[in-house]
Each structure stands twice: as structure tokens, then as C-alpha cells.
Image 1 (cartoon, rainbow, N blue to C red):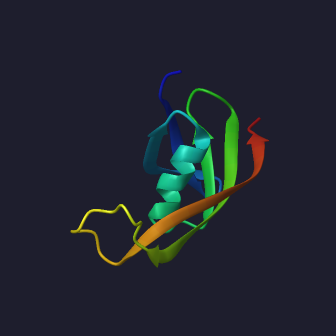
Image 2 (image 1 turned 135 degrees about the vertical axis):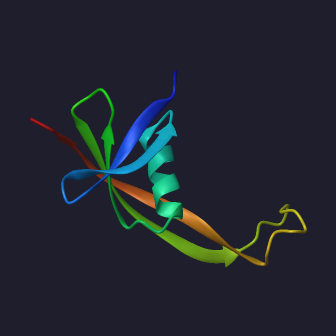
Amino acid sequence: MSKKYFVLMEGGKDTSQVFASKQPRGAALKAASRGVKDISLRERGTKRVHVFEGRRDHVAKPANGPSWLPDKVWKANVKKLRVDHLD
């Protein structure tokens, strides 16, 4: 399976932000880690728009985390709402 490109949309228009991932969820996690809450990702080359709800939480660092990692880190979370189809 090859890499796909997803363009972040705001207000029905494309932005300049493009996320590369094999799955739309991976691209949504990248957007959520940057603080985007309402995530609409248009899959390049298709008429599909993947819609997610994103958030990021301040959590304790993992037990196996490296020593340079701070005690609290941001963890992204997404929930898929639907897939829209452009006309």
C-alpha cells in the first residue's frame, strides 16, 4: 500500500497544509497534534473528504520514554465522523 496525500480543508476550501499517510486516520492524527479540532481531509486524486473530530491531551510521558522527554507530553486523539463525497 502506497502513501496517500490528504489536504486539510477549512470552511469548504483547501488550505496549504498537506499530510502524507497510508490511512486517513494517520493524517488526521498529524493534524490533531497541531491543535486542529474540526478536521476535514480531502484525499488527493479522489472526491472523498474524510471528516474527523480531533483533540490533544496533556498526559504523562510513557514509561519507556527517553530521558530528554518532558514529564508531560501532548497526545493526539481522533474520532472519525463520516466520509463526504464532492460533486
